[in-house]
Length: 261
Image: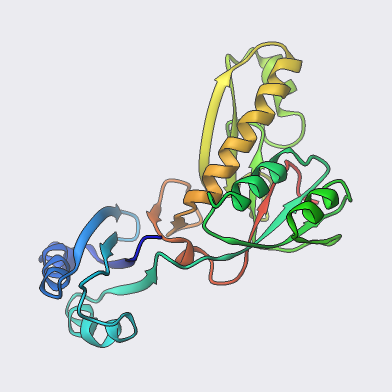
């Protein structure tokens, strides 16, 4: 397992232009931190500079528990809001599944094989279909509903929301079909998008078959790289790259089928 840390930060753009990236880089290097990844984004609507830095903790001479004290002068100088998360953090995850179990089966297999860096604590459904899978993998199963979720929808959102999207696409003569994983909000199929993929369409039956495979892949990628936290819920385009720890401090949830129940 990687022994690294991720620093997620935001600062006003005018202050960022005065050298915040150089200052933070110098701070980490001075304390023997070897930077592995750096991603930056400017939220023009809010006038904020957003950054994600990951560095190797081997040889880093500041204990993670004392990082805030050492970083405080720099944070005050540039009005930095930040969150620090060790990459060894394994979030507790709840899977929500409706009547179809192909996605939850794939997630459980990837979890058992060590591909997903999380702890699946419960499967929740309004059907008993997935209970044998839960029992097989030793995961608790409940017939109830929980908030705070990721949904996988079988279309390339924002097109064809709601039920029977493949039929809608076929009727409209669409040449590509897709699957989209997104955060669940109060508006149907309108939450911030995490992952998408497409395949070429054929008959409705082929679209359904290809779509099921695509749903599994898209949801698995969301579960494995789940790093998007939106700085403004009003638009899918205003986002910053964040770590799983920052994304959800409480147990997260995945919808492994299409419909919110």
